[in-house]
Amino acid sequence: MTDAVLVFNPGSSSIKFALFEISPELRRIASGAIEGIGTAPHFLARDSTKAVVAEQRWPDGTHEDFLATLLHWAEDQLGGHRLVAAGHRIVHGGAQFIQPVRLDEAAIDALEKLSPLAPLHQPHNISVIRAVAKLRPDLAQIGCFDTAFHATMSATTRRFALPRAFEEEGVRRYGFHGLSYEYIAGRLREVAPREAGGRSDIASVAAGLRNAFVRIVRDRKLRGLLVLWALSAAAFLALQGLWIVSWFAAAYEVPAGSARFWATSFSIGMMIGSLLTVKVTATSEQLPQLIRLSCWGNTLCWSALVLAIGFRLPIAAAGAVSLLLGASCAIRDVFTMGGVNDLSDPREKGAIFGMMNMLMPACRLPGSAGEVRAITIR
Image 1 (cartoon, rainbow, N blue to C red):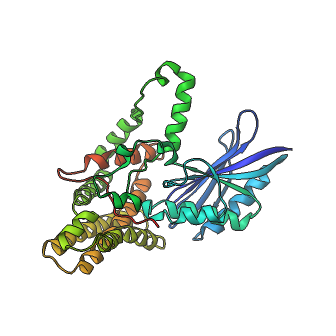
Image 2 (image 1 turned 30 degrees about the vertical axis):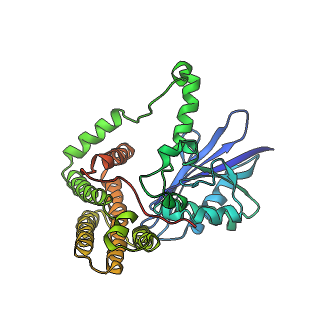
Image 3 (image 1 turned 45 degrees about the horizontal axis):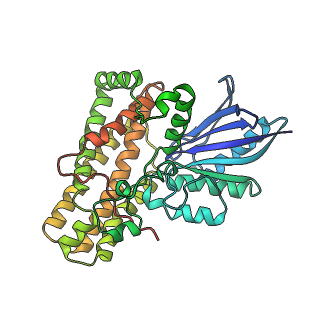
């Protein structure tokens, strides 16, 4: 009997999966995704020829509900194969997890504590792992981390221009998308060994991005929504240089621990905002209005934060506004992603989302300190 593995790539509103036969070279048996989690969950699976072999929709549900269906379906597809493990792409491994690990209860608990470092994705990774552990307690689960590839970056590269005490609490660069880089680096050694021997710059710039740009320019609705999103994101990123922990401490002349507590409220707000959107069901006609409202709400929140700190309101008030700002940022991004997903041609979605990610650094205004968040990891 041949062994097989089921691998998961969870996102904020989807779970992509693939079923592989373990042989000298992995052979894909089937693949698919559960999309629309939190709005209109939809399960779709395809075999190795890309033909649709299973489809199901739910009005609502939990990760456990969806994975129960997926695991039952996957086991039906095994035939003469035996499912021996589940693999997980996990966005954040922190400083501790720098290579693939067996996901026992201790490892899962440690990974859950890293959620403030990736509040839009890490909780979904953990939900999938816990659901599989509950549904198939004897199935081995292995975690692979997007941050692990960057574990060898130098101390100078990973440090922010902040007091060393903050780095000891977890405030540092970790790097992301490492599994993609690792795959590209491995393939480069096979297809272009000479180039792989030196320094290589990896960039995803292709015709898809050009087509996505043309699509955005020509589509009035999509263009309007993304311009509003970009302006809102630009204002937020500019402010990141202001309300980091050291600025809270200097503005209010309080100990670093107190400033760190109030600045961290932003990340807590992002988690709350993500949870608030779970129960929101919007039609295609309602999404543009929700995006506009969330962008304007986000603008009001960061304006309120500037005023609260500028007028030296009590630090608790600034912390509360920081919490609201985090929530509004999460709500804005969830609705914007939903709107782009709904308005875009399926063949262009990935390129448009990629362009949005590329625009984020370009949105930073002069004086921004970049993507520095005050997070305490214990």
